Length: 300
Image 1 (tube, rainbow, N blue to C red):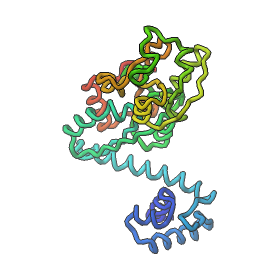
Image 2 (cartoon, rainbow, N blue to C red; image 1 turned 60 degrees about the vertical axis):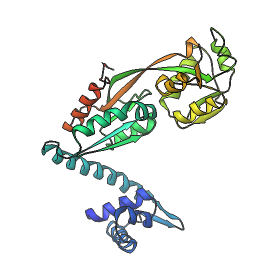
Image 3 (cartoon, rainbow, N blue to C red; image 1 turned 180 degrees about the vertical axis):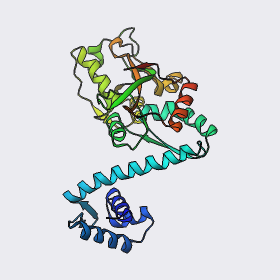
């Protein structure tokens, strides 16, 4: 097995087809097919099942792909170490963030970091809490920022911002005129929620469960923008981060319902692999985070 064959196999497996893998690797399709065939011959197993619209990993292919992923992560670490040794003249930083954090908190932080270190490549992966956890454990990202809880013993955690979740409704909603809205009244309304695996949804469901209330979502949506736009269109009510609706509340498109049980403090957490020291690039990024008032404030 040689490095080039493993790299091409990884590209094909990630892309889901030899043609797409060849494009991603900037190699001709016949050359990729030849290298994959030689790799299968060397190992004595079939790695891919060719299909009309791509290919699928065999069981042996899945085993090798896991090792190829680790190899790519280790190769990336080696490259970053050399870059950082050169004094941050160049480097790479991979950040994972859940949707609210990536869209509303991080843009000014990343802009400030880029001004100070313009040759450092920054990759921001926006995903839900479960996906961020998997990316950290797989070594694909250097730091993760999540809205939901992660219980993995392999990750360290620190609070870097105190958010608050609030129940929202469209302007003119019948509950908006009430001085106090009970949780039971709110639960009778069509509820819009994030998708399963979302940190926001997990927090809201736990808050409802504490009061013995269970809600079946009228609709599950994959982004905060989709939820607030759907609420504004009159499809139902939702519980979202105050950060994402400040502009809509200011112009009167949305209102915050006075449901005490659904006004939920929510710490946003910084996650890193336990026992792994901060690289120079990550240390500088965390300084920028602190300079924007997003410093870690508590461990746990």
